[in-house]
Image (cartoon, rainbow, N blue to C red):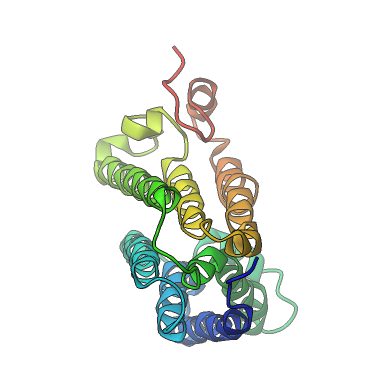
Length: 266
């Protein structure tokens, strides 16, 4: 693990935590004023963008400039696309049912409870999951074939995610589809193309840090945690529990992959 600037990286971890916290504090203030905590979902992608940009500034003089710029641009492109998508999807809607149910159990102030259980937790997750983005910017030497393979995996992931989101938005915009299950396009190959896209994005960003054994070791927890969140945490499992009673959903589950894409069963 020689050659990795541990002291500089340790300082960067503190700056990244401050950047993630700042995004959550601003988002919390906006949400309290608006009376809707679903706004925090928009801050998820913005938080990663802020961490990447902060690391780019703090890591000056360390790492390879091409890798630093590449990982920052890739993270920002993913984060800002996701933030814009979530903002458009939630426009004109009230509180998210997930947060409404959680806040109904709040002991005391709902806002204080939301800050502790949603904003601080999400800020901590942004910091943790962004470890490859931070570590990659301190890796010496130009990107190797492995790093470019990670870039290709990132591109496949964001493409899968964006196409899946666009297909679902068009489906929902047609009144004739109200009450029916989206089972077309990428959604016929996997029940969660957006989550699978996120999975590819974060394993791809991790590969950008793998030219350094030290950076890989310190950041492998990120794609593992993200994979667990997507498949067993607040992603796939929670959404499928919500969808389980909808007409036609059991049949959709029986013929469509739960995560990794494959042709639908007959």
